[in-house]
Amino acid sequence: MTAHLDADPKLSIIVPIYNEEDGLQALFHRLYPALDAVAVKHNISYEIVFINDGSKDRSAGILAKQVELRPDVTRAVLFHSNFGQHMAIMAGFEYARGEYIITLDADLQNPPEEIDALTEQLLKGHDYVGTIRVHRRDSFFRKLASRAMNRLRERITHITMTDQGCMLRGYSRRIIDLVRQCDESNTFIPALAYTFASNPTEISVKHEERFAGESKYTLYQLIRLNFDLVTGFSVMPLQIFSILGMLLSLAAGSLFAYLLFRRFLLGAEVEGVFTLFALTFFLIGVMLFGLGLLGEYIGRIYQQVRKRPRYVVQTVLEKK
Image (tube, rainbow, N blue to C red; front, top):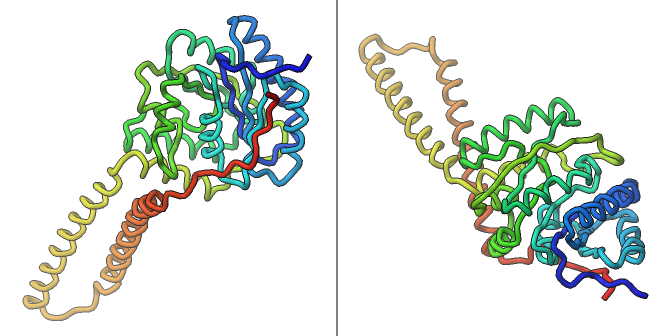
């Protein structure tokens, strides 16, 4: 008998994939037993939606074979090219059919066995379940940068997520539908979902070493992600820069008046010329930073008005 996908699963697991061929089999060996156990424990049906984000290795072929092996619970959405992890998750939201949705990284740093704990919180009525990685297995630099960005994000956006970088999160269908209605070219999904949540919670989860490969986020991409987070949820940076510009203008005007008064009182002098150079360079740096910050907001407007598709799906692999 041919197995078919449940037309109305209770739980959907979304897994973005990008060049993960070395670790996919290990993921399958842990993910499916973990979800089978969750299904039995809570008497619910589930589906897994893999999003292949334009992988250049054999990931797409491995996913196609897995669809053949477990057609009852597996679908694979193949992107035309690489659109980024957050767009892969947005596509997963579009294709997921469950009442509860959980996102999961493919590198096994977030153990699939932790899905049970998130499912329990969702079944209790929480519409957003965040996670906090315990004994985080990342480099000191990444942990330090993550803590710094967490504090900066909380002060600027007033979104209180303890660990913004953990992919393992749970959402109710209501939250997912609201996120999908936001037609933004770039967004930070966990923060956006948190703003819509009426009964959010956070739980601690285990964190493991990456099974294979390396992080797909370069330093530049991490910086870009945090710019998207800050500029997508607050205009405070522009307000701070406006206040800073006003203060610097007052300081520069006062310094000019002082130097002018000093020139007429004591005559011309050159002793402070290097101080003036340093002050000038500082002011130029502040202006350039302000232009870059303004450019971030204008760039978001530019991307939005073009109304280009956020991602292009090549095909969907499933058994009907």
